[in-house]
Image 1 (spheres, helix red, strand yellow):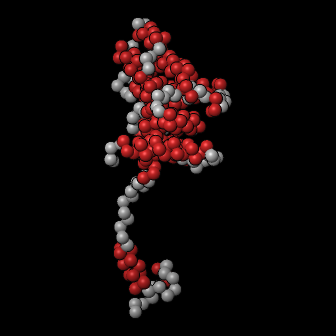
Image 2 (tube, rainbow over the protein chains, first blue to last red; image 1 turned 135 degrees about the horizontal axis):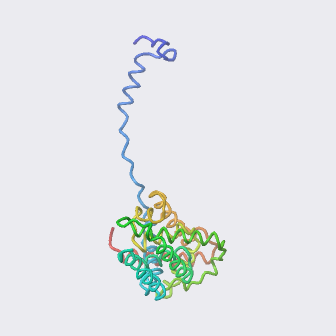
Image 3 (cartoon, rainbow over the protein chains, first blue to last red; image 1 turned 45 degrees about the vertical axis):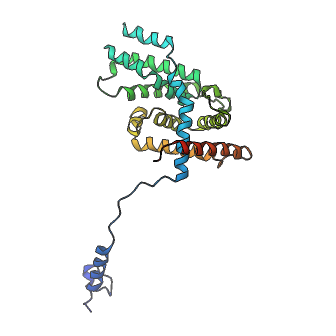
Length: 82
Length: 187
């Protein structure tokens, strides 16, 4: 059994060099942290998102294809021509 | 000012209309907002630095105009009064009903979440572009879209509505989801 660590090293009473060695060994034995991975979407969420995307396009696509009001084009052209 | 600036304004008008519709939930208010934003942009044209992100600049002007109008008007529109004519749809009956519910649910979302979701899905914007267009961090932009999706899912799949209407709406949405899954290519 290895001698006790002196208290001047900040060791608790009864702590031995062996204890430190075992602690150090257990730290190196610890598995490396796995790289964080983004949480995968639940299949139900994926399915809803597909439906939602389609629904949003059905709601909004027509508006983006409508002609620009003449009044608005006139405002821009007036500024272009100074 | 060079002709390029005015051409860019005209080219982006359809996207501004979509953003305005997402924010105002009302077709005529959206048209007014776009016109106001365009006037602001034309007045501030000298402050735009050529070669920088025009779309982000223009989207931010529209967004700021919307916020400014809200503060002035203290809008208290009842969501149930927002005309569904704001959203056009030619879908079959069950689809129309589900879309109507989607429209109602969209109107209930906070405006920043609604705007974020529409710009990502309908415009195909990246989160980085969305962040720049709305003046927030990329993480915030992602969070808005995520929260919007999950909130809509909770409402439309019956988690936060009283029965029996909830069951009918849920069923319509589930049918739609099944059809969308069948139609979409495998991931």
